[in-house]
Amino acid sequence: MQKPLQLSFKNIDGSEAMKAIVHQRVGRLDRLYPNLIGCRVVIEAPHRPGRGGARPPLGISVEVEIPAKPKIVVKETEERRTSRDHAAVVNHSFDVVERKLDDVASVVQGEVKTHEAAGETGTITRLFPEQNYGFVEAKDAGSLYFTRNAVVDGRFDELAVGMMVHLTPATGEGPMGPQASSIRLLGADRAGERG
Image 1 (cartoon, rainbow, N blue to C red):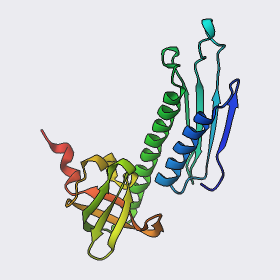
Image 2 (cartoon, rainbow, N blue to C red; image 1 turned 180 degrees about the horizontal axis):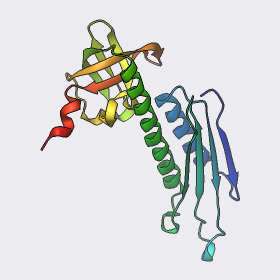
Image 3 (cartoon, one colour; image 1 turned 30 degrees about the vertical axis):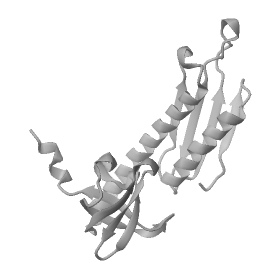
Image 4 (tube, rainbow, N blue to C red; image 1 turned 90 degrees about the horizontal axis):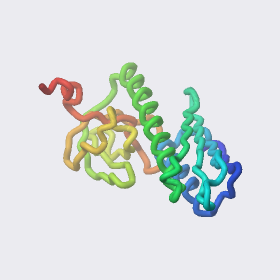
């Protein structure tokens, strides 16, 4: 990210464990979406503690700045029944942020595909689903790295080693060298025609 993480706590002391979860999730965002400008996270206890000293429900606000698009803002408040594990609301909030970033990436890739007919066919050579990336081999471009958000229509989980795909090489290199800016499953345009 271009700017350092802004993390603040209101009406609650931020534990080291909570800070570690936030830093881990922001680091993941930075790896999956390397063009992000910045991230601001506010964690607060919006209500007074419950009877018997129970933990108050936690509220979290995550704002992510992305180039040439409006900020992505996610605000969550955990339910009292889940207040035992504050990590759950933090993780859920970042999951929502990732889905929204995937949506933005799909729109951007759609715009690129509309304006650029460039692309070629390649074969998936390696997949790392737990880390959300893989490699595709293309005749003219060689081995290219790609991330989950580069797969059009959110179909990353449908990929398999040896599968043929249509790809568009990126103009710049990613964290693992040359990369593909989009991966489209062959025949994906007909997927909706099943009866």
